[in-house]
Image (cartoon, rainbow over all chains, first blue to last red):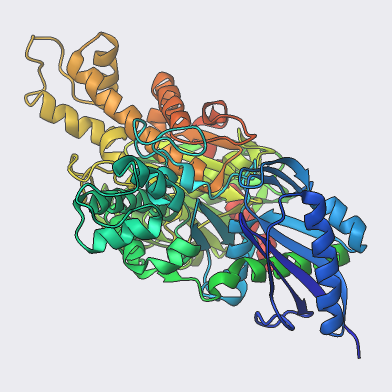
Length: 320
Length: 320
């Protein structure tokens, strides 16, 4: 018997994941393998390879592809299916939903990766049973997705969850958004790396110790007691705490799920930031913030799972 | 023909407003007068006078009272209809919903005044047609109500919108909540008055100028150029900007409606805080924050209108 499957796509800055999942969605178990590929720099090539890969995966799962969900880094226009700006690919105003729908003949839903991750974790992961759920992704950038009553809160201009660009210090380091001192400029991978380049300009520390180039290097150096690295991490903790506190004071989430490569890898960093957020908020008759912060259960698959939920939801909405 | 009316009650720290409105609610026009009374210190007396007043107002409007909505200062337990703590009355764990339902024979819905104000302004006031709507009340305290898709966001522990207790400076002035340096401790009426007492301990300024005792006095002194008063107001602007920025970065409201006695009276204060919030957030493809901040259209009636909406909603929910 041939069933219906939805396509799930996680378009990352460097790599893209593709999978299919059988309807009705029960838990997050993709049917078959997850295909990993470098994200092509050419949007037309991306559309072609996605259409081809999804057709193969659907065939392997003995299912008919009926809808596709995509999570991608913002800013994007979810309603029109357009990626507004993707610095890594050099994309500006790139339509992704409409050409993929043309190529496959099925509806395509595009949403930003923080929203998709929030939906995936709320439905199938660490946010299951909780309401509201906030999902905070900490990797090269920082963004949050918010799910209230099972639905994504998008805001008036799609900018809900932009706590990564809350300004902590107007005189702070330059951020990718053009401002200074955003949470992201202190606490995200890109921010830590930029600050590391300023602290150790030639990539070699003054004392001849190993080079500090990546965010992971900064954390490693801090663990060995390097004072400059410890300062960068402490600034990151303070900034991340401010971002978490804004989420807590505004929507009082029952659970805050942490995802993203840096968020998943640096547990101590996240729990220090959670304690900082606790200091900055009140919890009337509620659990203190740090007790509500948990790791993403789907790990690298949060966005993929959310993309499947988005695709499934598109079909449910059509039926209404 | 006798129609149905809902009772609307705004229990304030010092005064209580009571009105009735005809169903179906179309715009906010209470049917008949708004009764104003000092809030009785004894909860049993409050229940008795509310039951009596609502019966009289329903009779005057030639309607049958079918439900009652109450907005009251938090913290409270909306589900159980209990006021958890009201420092002005010295109340702790005072049930208000159940005894009023017993006395009147109709369902009673209790919610905190910020949520009720948000609902009133979103449905009938300055938030009409906008989504999400945030309503920020600035008076003796500071609190926010958030309406997304026409529904109040309460959070996991009823603490959504608690931006008044976001800590701006952990070493700052003592706040009513027991912490230091909350937005409220710098920017609300109570905070400004407490700081004024510290700046001018005997209520008379060093130069013999008039006493500065109330928040209104602080603003008046700042306008005449008093340096200490200007500093207090500037601190308030900075703190209020932080609270607004947390709302914007988290839920990207289409409109932020400002209510509360101080919020309505001090326009310059609010617009300076809105400009500060603009500096602290990004507005990707959206209107800058300060363009989204508006005054409550129902003025002192926001909470009363929201209370009517709550009562009406209770009947709609029953019918479902």
